[in-house]
Length: 505
Image 1: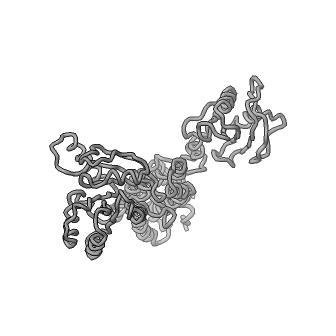
Image 2: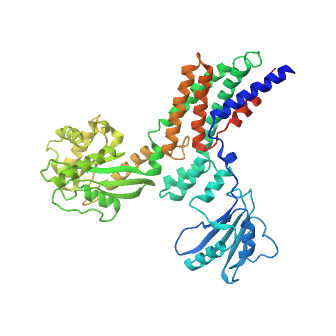
Image 3: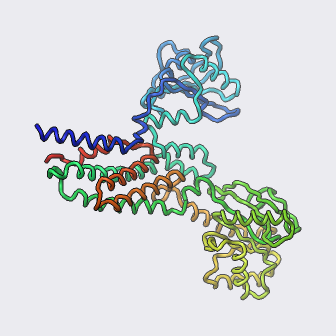
């Protein structure tokens, strides 16, 4: 009897310590059930053939019956029914459309949901929204509130919520693929898998602290933790060393066109934009400010910038443009370094040395590597083909020179080869969103993962001197992982303790 009391008291101590250690409990369990019912237009704004109005909450069924004139109860779940949409007070017919019923918990939000598929004219949409607003207990939804309720109901974790948002805003094929994979839960499963491993390690350490003195626990428990923690830390650090591919794909690759004056930067900018976005003139120094546009190149999002020509000048306005150009080059993921072919040395053997010095003037030393730039020799139409061939042979034999694209913005000759090279570089910078492990897509994720790695270092620091502080390091690491997905709580640790250990064997 006394042994049972001791075990119970020890369990309570562990429970209290875990409770104090986790201020951030699972959102799904801590969030109160929303009492009100909300509605909103779920499809896009503007005139369209079809619009979808969605209602979620405890009064969704009553709203469906009144607005759709259903006197004989609700329709079968997930079955479309053609009905007249009427105003509940005036009984005026607003439209004729489809209605659907999704009873909770088998719905997007986990609550009862009603949907009205109506015609997409502004007057129809406004009339239906006003009709719903006239019903007691219903109110317009706030931005993202449907997804927030899905999160609180445990239908989506935070990574899936972010993936859904990215999918809605995706503008290129690669962005769509990455967002769809994240929304499907691939990234969340990766982080939850790490959380499960760390949760098990923490449970083992906590159990060792509380139950080891009476020989109530298996031998080698801490040895298992000593093996698992460095493996987990190595996996997280490898995930962090991704050169920001997922984040770059999500937000867009910063591509900057830079070079000396009259090298054809604005001409190339207009070709890539497929419109006269920048002024082109034979006068040196025409472009004095940053001209930017968003593009889809080969399915990858690009933020393309045209910049002022790099030269020493006494004009204060142009000098500011040059300063901004160098600043943009320093921030760029990829720099398109444009060279006027007419400025190349007459001797082909001297071209590689000239280009090396040219690159030093354009690029910061930290970015002087192959993946950070594409070297482009423009105005090839003004050079004899034999001379171009000799230049190509010399550059091919130069081992420390990145591949060079030779083209003419005037005749478009060589443009296809340049676009192929550019797409290859973009793919390298963004990666394949469908290959390998899911990509790290948010700065928020990176910050919490780095905190997790730092916290695991605390385990090593105090492992042999103070096991309680070592356990605190694991707890902090688990909390950091939980903040990414929105799921972490003390009850999870207690469940593992009593699932994995036969206490009092």
